[in-house]
Image (spheres, rainbow, N blue to C red):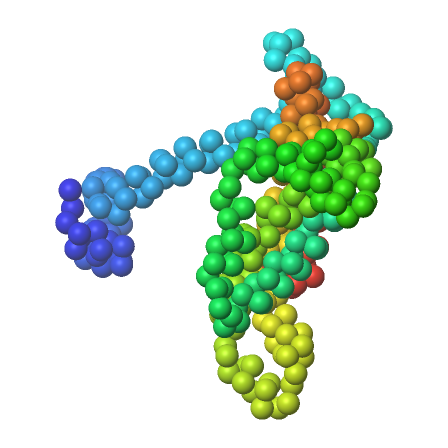
Length: 329
């Protein structure tokens, strides 16, 4: 093995300068040129830099295979009628045609978009509002930060069980509170008219804390001199918020909106634990249909096509967000 200094000299070009005489000799004698090439190759293979690159390349190759092979395989079987049997065949765009013409899948697309629209704007605003309050010098802010972040680290199963008890139409905490106010109880998760709204509320409760922490980090990165200068110029608190805080937080806001949107599109655990797409398909989303179609009906080709539609939908919504902020891909 070559020493570290030899490898460094090779990488910096010193090796070639030292062998200039060998190059001149090789120009006159082809056999000497072949020997020199073999010599250089042996030096490269024996260098520490090549060994490091080799050890780095193998994990990257394995990671790439594990990461991209399922994506490519999913795309390929989306054009087939694959159902775990070896006798599947190519069906072209038939799966995608069924998605765009079947009322069940069209409703899943509408429910997914409604779920995202009902959750992301409200959740982003509430996260920023709470982060702004907790960024002030109030007493007990450590307790409130912990309390708001606690739902993020709570398991989905525990969250679903607690909210199912709260929203139980028969004696649940929510209907008990409504009854004490003289108001009629609601079906919450069992009523098609309120199931999606209930799911949005539960999702907001579980997701605000994580976004709040991100906004807090962004707020603490804004120079205090900007607020001091604005105060000297006579700016009010709301003016400082809209003309300093909001613009300075635009990269953080973009990150929160994009990641939150993707998370809502991929939301599965709460739907599986609480409604399973019901009642009457009122909470049926694309992610649920991927699971139900592939693992419930064993139509893996159609399920793969639904996942491709979901991916394209996320891309179509994420790209304009980045372009609106002037971000480069």
